[in-house]
Amino acid sequence: MDFDAVLIAPRRAASIAAGHWQDRTISDYLAACVRERPDATALTALSIERQQVTRFTWRELARMADRVALGLSRLGIVTGDVVSCQLPNGWHLSVLYLACARLGAVLNPVMPIFRERELSFMLAHAQSKVVVVPKMFRGFDHAHMLRGLRDALPALRHVVAVDGDGGDDDSDSFEALLSGPLWEDDADAAAILLGSRPGPDDVTQLIYTSGTTGEPKGVMHTANTLFSNIVAYAGRLHLTGDDVVLMASPMAHQTGFMYGLMMPVMLGAHAVLQDIWDPARAAALIREQGVTFTMGSTPFLTDLARVVAESGTPVPSLRTFLCAGAPIPGALVERARSALGATIVSAWGMSENGAVTTTLPDDPDTRASTTDGCPLPGVELRVVDGADADLPAGQTGRLLVRACSNFGGYLKRPHLNSTDADGWFDTGDLARLDAHGYLRIAGRSKDVIIRGGENIPVLEVETLLYRHPAVAQVAIVAYPDARLGERACAFVVPRPGQSIDMAGMVDWLRQQKMALQYIPEKLVVRDALPATPAGKIQKFRLREMLLGEDG
Ligand code: ADP
Image: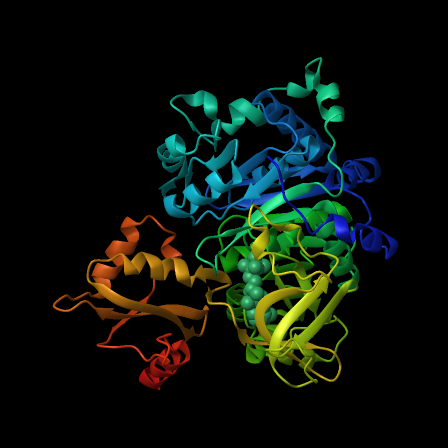
């Protein structure tokens, strides 16, 4: 596949000169771990779904990565091919990425919550050649879903299922094709592994971000863009190879992928992975494994703080919890700090550039409860008005970012890159800076709803509802929720003589086979919606109407 990562080459000389791009790939970091600490624990994966704990030392992890790389090459994967995976957190996902990186293949992790609608778009757009899924996860047969999509995906050669038969017989399982056979003993193994090493500016990861423009956008990253963030992030948080990192937030999102998969390899730190969010199990893992650092969006912090406070059993090893991905209420930060006895670091970031503002672990406590942090080294921020003029501290405007970790562009959608000739990326967030240069996210100019850290592509859901025979007009807006931050409400104007109710709306959206988490949880039926003279629906007034109803 031809990756049009047009934002990489123009930045190279300056990023290298500034020391932000260090030209090291994940394979280089993994090799260093094997050299320096071969028998230390690299990864502990708790699978609640499979009731299993799996451990790898660095030597074992690297060996398994080589084996899976060779298995992928036997399936025809070569440099520049896309391998997609719809895997929960666990060793399969980590190994698959390390294996792809060995071959120069691009890993495209997709969320386990996605269904036919999201996947058929993403896998076609990415021209994935292999897709790896769990046979069953949370009662859903992913292998069956993928088999149903296959005919519409001409580039897709193999559906590989963990723990089962991805195809018509058992031969399409992860175990049979990738992790079982001792491929590394084959005569041609070394030549394959040495023959296809990707460079640090080659696209290594493709991650879809929920569309604000009607369809998901494929964010392309290279080793240099990703590690330039991870190196700075770990440095700021004082993380080293002695840390133990828990990742229960999905590794199919940038946060879990960068800080649960890549960062531990970069540091030589022990990664502890959890597949299904269960705060009591997370607290137990923290105690058992001596976890020192974890990260997640607000529901993870809310839940963990609650179970630790309720159990009365502390988590003394936990030094830092980094919270990002959605607005972070100050009261939650304070409650969590006292319940966990850990430093809470607030941060802001996106799939396009990683977590690029964070508070400092040594900051006064109020910084994490009132701001989303200050820029990491290699990151600059601007808050501008409608005419792109810089605004003074304290005033809210559009947030622009220029970062060494900015992505390479959106796959096949360069016109949407939102990055100007000087490298400023328009984030679609509204923010203000304080006198100390700390950022506070104040809202969004882009139309997404963030439900528990998961972005709902509002336009896409509205488009599907517009196709409902009873719907004349629809607008989806957020309403506040104590645990998830926001949930979605659909305002609908029915066609004359028609009607729609909640059950009808949910049925309709279920039939579209979209992620269940995207379905609005409230429906308000009206004769008309507030609009500007030009006919644009005034969503702010709908949000106010909802608040008025509740209050
Ligand atoms: P991720 O995969 O890391 O969740 P996404 O690209 O899906 O990233 O979502 C990024 C968006 O999440 C941001 O543009 C912003 O709207 C929101 N977000 C992230 N961090 C914060 C924060 N600290 N406060 C408010 N909103 C945030």
